[in-house]
Image (cartoon, rainbow, N blue to C red):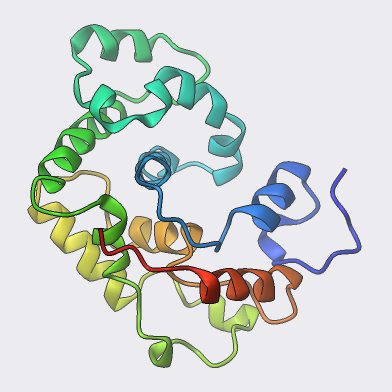
Length: 204
């Protein structure tokens, strides 16, 4: 059971799945390429659905997509697409499945010139001075994209990535700790802030 006494962001309510994700993952900095690629894929699959739906299917997605190991997903072919379309544990959407495979291939291309996916994505971390001084629920409701998420989306699209719109990229930045969008008064906000202060931004 989730601790209902803990102060949290309003979006997670009291659902145990959401609370665990909120308390332990959302907004904490990540520098692991596999996790970054997984989250990018899952954000793409979420389009038009709730994050709770994706979160509850995450283990099935990991099994279906070779734990989101980039080199393995990049080798998926039509037989794999048919296998995935028949997997009731995931979201069976051909366009999203093909996008995940395409993005794995594009990720390998990016890694030919970039030291890591993490180093690439963290270049789009916004300047702290550009962020709102107080993240109230009212302020957060207006924040679905940012100049940085728009720039990241534009660059990825130019490189041939799919399902990487600016709103999706802002959600990725929230989840991976490039921005800390825990609201004022949320107990996890300070924990995520301390984690960011201790975090070494990847350069390689």
